[in-house]
Each structure stands twice: as structure tokens, then as C-alpha cells.
Image 1: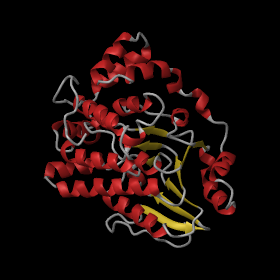
Image 2 (image 1 turned 180 degrees about the vertical axis):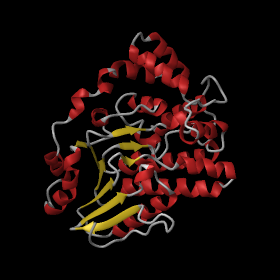
Image 3 (image 1 turned 45 degrees about the horizontal axis):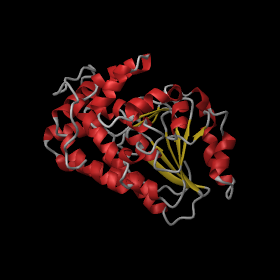
Image 4 (image 1 turned 45 degrees about the vertical axis):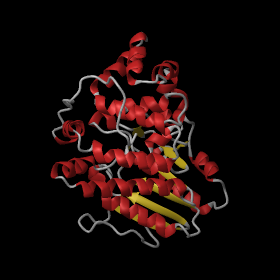
Length: 346
């Protein structure tokens, strides 16, 4: 990268975030490839500092991407959060979540258009970096998801704001199941705005820099190819999905899935049976309340919930099973999801 280096990084892990200005376009690269660009507190702070430094700079756009073709960003470093909880270091986790959510709000309110280039995994915190910006271009390798219920957590980074605003009951479905969207599904739901083949991503910055005054939407469409949205798997099950996940309780969702005689419904029941019952309740209540909240109100509610959720047995067990021992066999404290979340933060 060339021109005006701006971003300070973690002295123990130098260059995990790279930032510069190139011909009037700000560029931020996540550069933690071995960890699939999973976010740490220093990475969040570095991105935030770069954006803050550029707020009053006459930029055409800010491009946000990753250096690893396998991942734009695989989310937050949730193993570190578990370690903080086991060590009783609540302040470290608070710094991470509070900083991450401030960054999410900054991206949503940023005065310069932000263009995220999503090639590979974009999970959890990766969606927090991308979805709040105006432009999200996905490649044929893109995979997007909010998989938190599988680790005893809940969809955060403003998900309680943007998921309820997706068409129909898609947001509730994605939040409860952690379903992974390919490029077609991402475009169908609106989580992605454009499709650009992976071998053309390198042209985006120069296109933005060399065509100032041309709408970004026009430039991205010009770099793209025929949209794969017509092949969306979610579109094919949309009727069943809306009927089942439009229910007012998790118990009713299960009941409707039982009444549907389809392979999709059976597979979805299996997913709900496998994830944390506690997380299902919290997520359903959080997304329902989020329909009537602003983004900042949603982020505030999510921050309050993190303080209690990351200390629960389900969170500690879920992260252990998925990311520490990797046996994929969590033993949740509860075996059913009857009832609703009662945490006052929801």
C-alpha cells in the first residue's frame, strides 16, 4: 500500500491493520490472515483511529477489505472473551465490546461512503464492519452469517437493528439458526449490495479514484457480473420461512416447523435443537425489541447483555466446544427453549 500511512497497530502483533490514502480513496486492510482476520481490541481501535483521522478529509470513499482470500473477517476473537471470563477480567471484555460497538456506530454515521469488499468468510463482527456501511460487494467466495446461538451467545454488533429490518422473517431466521448465506442469498436479503468476481476486486480502488463524480453504485455495477441472486436458496423457501419464523415465540416457531412437511423444516428443527436454548430466547426477544429501536439503542442493549451473557455456563461451554476443544458437542445447561428472555437489557 502507498501514500499516507495512518494506522497504529498492536506492538505485539504489528501490521494487523493497514491503512492509507491512495489517490483520494481511504483503504483499510485487515491483516491477521492466520486468524481469518478475527477482530481484537487493538484492531478495532486501529480501524476506529483511521476513520476518525479521515472524517474531515475530502475522500471519494473508504474501501474496507481483508488480506486473506479465505476471510474478510471471521468475527470477534471470541476465544479471548472466554479466557477473560474464566480469568474474571471483565474490564478486558468490556473494552472490546464497547470499542467494537462504537466502531459500528461510526461506520453507520460516517460522512464518507464506505465500500466493503467481502471475499470469503464474513461472520459476526465482520458483518458489523460491513453491513452498516453503504456498499457491500460480495464475490463468489462470500459466506455471511451470524452464528452466535451455536456458541451460547447472541447476534450483536447491531444485529438487533439490521436483522429485524430484512424482508419478512428472514432476520429472525438468520439470528436464531446462524444460517450461512452464499453470495446469492446475501444479495437476495440485502446484506450485500453488489456482486463482483474475486478476480476483479483489485480494480475497485482505482475505479473509485479515477472516476470521481461517478456514483459508486454505477462503478460497482460496472465491475460486476451477472448477479447470482436468482439462485438464492432462501428465495426458494421464503414462504415456509416467513410463516414459521414470523411466530411470536420460539416455542411457536418450533410448532410451525413440525407442521411443515418439508426437508427444509426438518433440517431447521435440527439446527434449533442443536444450539443453545438460552441463546434462542435471548435472541428472539432482542430482535423483537430491536424493531422499535434506533441503531444506537440496539447497540446499548447489546452491550448490557454482553456483561451477563459472557459469564453464563452456556457461553463458556459453547465456545469451548466450537473453538477450544473443537469437539462440536456442547452440553447446554437447559434442554428446551420454553419461555422468553427475562434479562432487563432486552
